[in-house]
Length: 83
Image 1 (cartoon, rainbow, N blue to C red):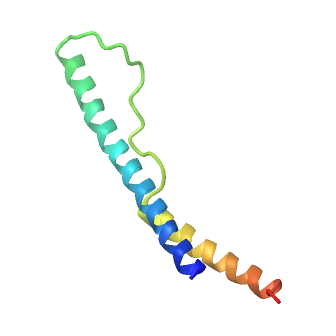
Image 2: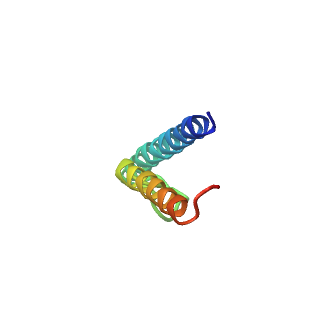
């Protein structure tokens, strides 16, 4: 039962983290467009740099990390079996 509980908890954390980071990137893109629009209108904008639009990992990177974690856990289990 512990394995399935941990797997479910991991899925919740991963989906929440990727969702929040994706939304952060979308908001950064919108704000960067607004800043560019205000600059074109001649308005003064206090932000010196563009906001970071790519925050965190892509879904492919998350999948690769999950598979790597499973592989490492399996290898450790094979090297140090539970008696």
